[in-house]
Amino acid sequence: FAIFSVDNYLNSPGLQASIALFLAFLPAMAGFAYLFAFLFKKPGVALFCSWMFNLSFGILAQITISILNIFESVATVTSIIRWLCRFVPVFSLGYGHLIIGLFQARAKELDIGPLAGLGVGGKWCTPKEEVSGRYIEAFQCVYMAGDEFLILMLCAFLFMGLAVVVDIVTDLP
Image (tube, rainbow, N blue to C red; front, side):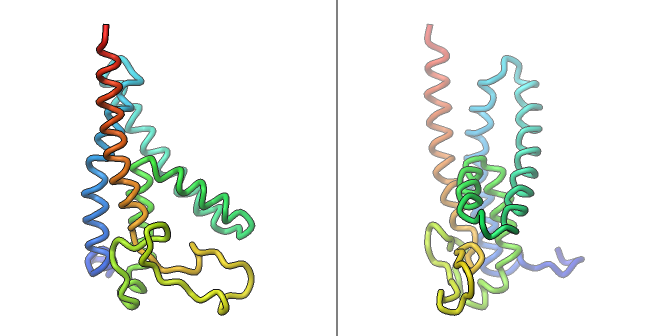
């Protein structure tokens, strides 16, 4: 980061948000990968397919949402797709770091915490009166990685719990 003078991830609140995302990502991804392994008979095939799925989904979902963000008319659809994609841990990790990169400097200036988000609160938004045209929260607000952190934590418990249930059910005679 120092080579390119990119310090969004080294200063507050970006550093704290990044650490929180990585800590929440680990158990969520472990549960997701374990659940994914139940779809295959051989562990090597499961590992390869999981890797390819996560790589492809992470890239394609980010690109799709970035393209959809261009069109104001589909903002509601884009928001729904974004919330659904967050249940794949690699997307939440990548999108959270994208948000950190975009908003860290402004968040520091406005004293916004590392876990602020559109859904969890703590964001700062331009007043509706000052916006001409359609008011879209995702475009008018400054926030950090709170939504991604929340979803990663929920997914960690959800995926681990599902993995235990599926493991027990598949081992029954």
